[in-house]
Length: 286
Image (cartoon, rainbow, N blue to C red; front, side, top):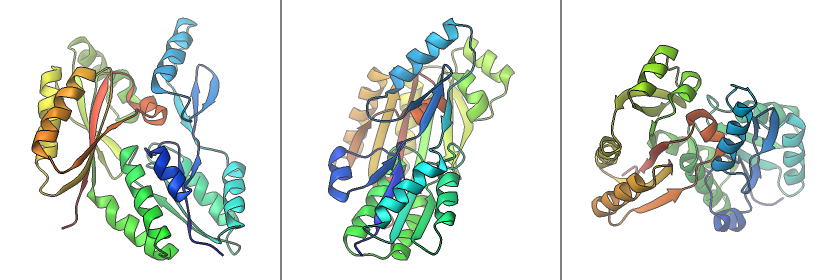
């Protein structure tokens, strides 16, 4: 049998080159918006998600988008197909607090127990963070690491991922970050931007600011606190000018660090809404 195969989901930020080089298998989420389920792939963007949501709202629907995992049979089909090449699979997924993909993958792996060795890992992260873990796993697999060695690499890297985000669409945060309805209404009236961090895979509201200049300052200060930054990703929606200002400052601060502009995945946009900016930091272990 061949090397360990790597599986992830469509929330992961991965370049086409990385996907092709390591033959990473991507299982798409399905996003329910306006009564229809749309598969999350490269052709479905956050802008399209919000357009569909506006159309649904115009028809009288107030329901926010829902993130649905692939069904178990779809995941079983992926595992069985890959199992013809390798009996060992590592499957890494979006934080289980935001997506049911990890639970579905575990169910599928349990159903195939005894036939294949499948390790399902909750990334406790999203987007760029999940993508970095997948890339590390894929590099280890290519180097000949066993399924258990790959799991140790990934589980060792998870605590070194940090996510902080500012979001203006506070109505979305009532569900995803447990922001109270009264806080949401008042915050929206005052033009508040809520600062969120991911802790144990959950979005936790920490503080609030009122101007986009303050947002850039806070994100810059967040990154500047780390002593050994290896990678940084910046994602945004309707924050183009603040993103440029932040990127310029971060590149001056960290001239030797790769700083990536990220696309905003619909599976994350469903929780944060439009009008947001955030950074994902991977801190080195040395």
